[in-house]
Image (cartoon, rainbow over the protein chains, first blue to last red):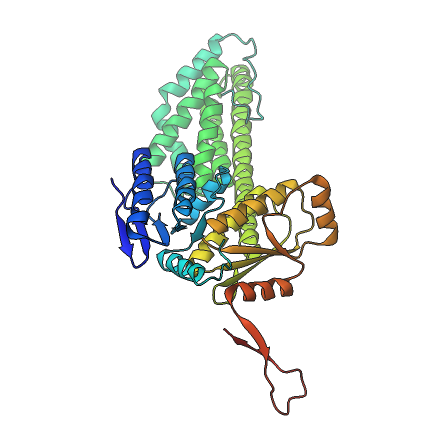
Length: 124
Length: 314
């Protein structure tokens, strides 16, 4: 199922609705890379609240989405990861280095706002 | 019954041939089965050994026991008695039957058999004596098998109870030993006391992650002053916990790394470079305030001899 990408001010929100196949992830990456340019967005929030599994491919895709979007001038924040998923990921040695994370959508948007104001404080 | 849990060795039948007398005894007991069993049940009822059994159960149990005993006498081997005793012990102990009830019941049966033999042979003493020679060892053997099975079963139940209690206590200690405390909005403190093994580290991480979600925490201070020794394994657990917290968007500050522990970690080459460390809990809270945008200012409180209480401002 295609992930809907919503525009919210100068940010984009990719809200994952159901379990993702590899093709879905590739599609999300491609569309985000285009839409960031179309809307001239400064930040992207990827909401993974509904995911109860995060495998190595998904982790790699999220990392590369963050890198691609940085090159396109936008900051990426992953939000809403479930505690179980987080724990399973560190046990499997999957890391989201260089990608910002936040508790939920609200916190993620606030993090982006704060970054834009110039204070690159915590929540790296 | 060859199960290794049974301490009772089943001896092979002594090469006693099924003599004519044994056959006669077996035939005698079979023939008078209903009469003798009835007598037995009556005697047991009188001594209230049957408390807690329904009449139906009494019926089936007594028939089985009777037949098993006669079978042992006939074949001169006790496998059937052994397995029946074990299963009876399991059921009996579970239902709270006392040893007195079981052993008393079998003693009664022994008396009933003995009395009937006496009635049959009381005219010919030599034959009675020979019959008792055959019958008594069998009865004693069956009794000891049942008694041992019961003792074993009782011990097993006691052992299991004790293990259960120990498990529950361990669980309680683990729960108590990892409190997650909120000291300010968005700030949690996790004081870790005691040794960290993998099991405890997992519980601790799960609990912390849940608390982060529940309290919407942004910064967590993990104080390891109370951890006696940190080796590469424990350090690895800490790194995993920090990573997991970060995936939920929380920053972790590790405090209370003792000088010896710092030296050990450096010597064994554990890299905690990605983790934010501050020397003590106070420093950790100050750093957390800075990250969260709090500023502590001292207010003038008139007439107070004690040092003024700090006030928070954001």
